[in-house]
Amino acid sequence: MFKQFLSKLPRKSSKSESGELNRSSSGTTPSPVHRSGTGGGSAPVRSNSGKRMSSAVFPASVVAGIEPLVPFKDVPNSEKLNLFVSKVSLCCVTFDFADPSKNSIEKDVKRQTLLELLDFVASGSIKFTEPAILAMCRMCAVNLFRVFPPNYRSSSSGENDDDEPMFDPAWPHLQIVYDLLLKFITSPCLDAKLAKKYLDHAFIVRLLDLFDSEDPRERECLKTILHRVYGKFMVHRPFVRKSMSNIFYRFVFETEKHSGIAELLEIFGSIVSGFALPLKEEHKIFLWRVLIPLHKPKSVGNYFQQLSYCITQFIDKEPKLGSVVIKGLLKFWPITNSQKEVMFLGEVEEILEAMSVMEFQKIMVPLFLRIACCVNSSHFQVSERALFLWNNDQIVNLIGHNRQAILPIMFTALEKNAQNHWNQSVLNLTLNVRKMFCEMDEALFMSCHTRFKEDEAKQCSAAEKRKEVWARLENAASMKPITGKTAVLLHQEKKMMEWLLLKLWSWARFIFVMLYITLMLLAVWVFNAKSLASFKSNETMLQIFISNSLYQLT
Image 1 (cartoon, rainbow, N blue to C red):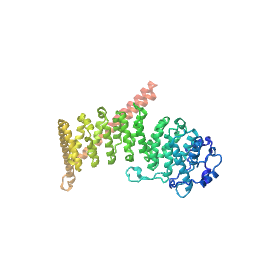
Image 2: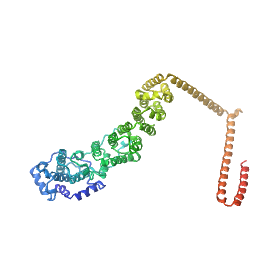
Image 3: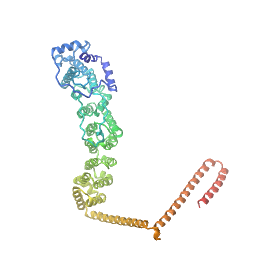
Image 4: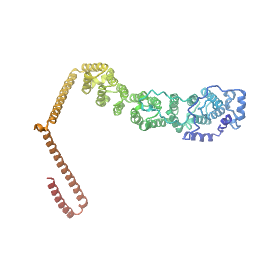
């Protein structure tokens, strides 16, 4: 088995390696790294017998005749890059981690080789050449890029957040590869101009696909690596943003299933903080078409903190976007989901803190109509969170400048809460807000109170009238024919309904006849306009038809 492991080593030719890397990056699935088993924990045996076995099985054409298992300290500086390529090529062989006892020696050899590569890259002693970059990218592609099985867990609904994360059994092996890739990308010995040819768009797309891993440790490593790629390779920045947008689009409008939305949003939050002012139209479109619709999925609670951070970063950059975001939140407001309502109210508070008075006036009426509904919610957490907005001095200041429009909207909701709400905490908060409004503008408060009492009186009067009508109907329906009495009310209503139906039928016939006449006029005008005589004869016929139709109507 060890001979089979070493026989898979690629040759020195950079052209063949380049072709294999391109095939691996563009869709040809490399040898899969199975997601079961462990990466091997015991240190490999570094005895002379191990070296003799290595010398016996390595072909003579392996990179300048250097064995991969030779330590870096045992070769001169001029040969270290060749040894680096040889060791990286050795690590391109993958194993099945389902059975820890299977290929244990080879796994330990590979693990020790990866650790040696990690130390060598971290030392930053030699500048990486193009063959070394190619070999490194190919090795990472073979070990990391894989297709995940379908996710059948029900956590995508967002209602059940108690599901424990699934940890990849092969993580001890994968972690070393991720650490090696991170050190390689951040190394000062790596020239971005050379590396961009191999860390290309296909590599980045496959890297982004790994964010769907269910292992949070893998997503955390990917987050750091992608952030470093974005920072070092400026030429790839537009493509990275576009590819991330495509993942968000697919999640919002198609699947609503993805494990790495929170990590991707965290990366994008740091990207937004570095945007130059004024914001480009491309970035505003991302806000309107991606970030705001991300409030729609049921699983928004899994990534809400990162999403809210991205939104606030945009508003800090350009405060005029606050009104646009509020309109979007109102569009996707979760009327039937109390937990999401509480989150939305918290985000509204953060946005209002950064909003100017002019922008606030654009959205204050629809916003406080929704807040009034939240204040009246029977779910005490929603009502309580809505009333907590008045604990924010900045929001109270905005309300104070626009109290003429806001108090009439909120007064009815506050009065209903004060009279009927079941929760004592909500009741106390409601009374405090009423007192705050009264101290803010007592005359306006009393005016709203008077109007509220008048509306209540009108509603009571209308309710009494409805009761009287129903009482008369019940009384008329209870009269018996044996007594000789006649249900006069029902008889009159029947006559009235017959008269109304007759009128409606007459009007319907009249409208139909007029439409028919109009169509006939258009037909005569189109087909017979060339001949005046023909038009006159048709007009005569049309007059006869109209007179007959009107006669029938009357």
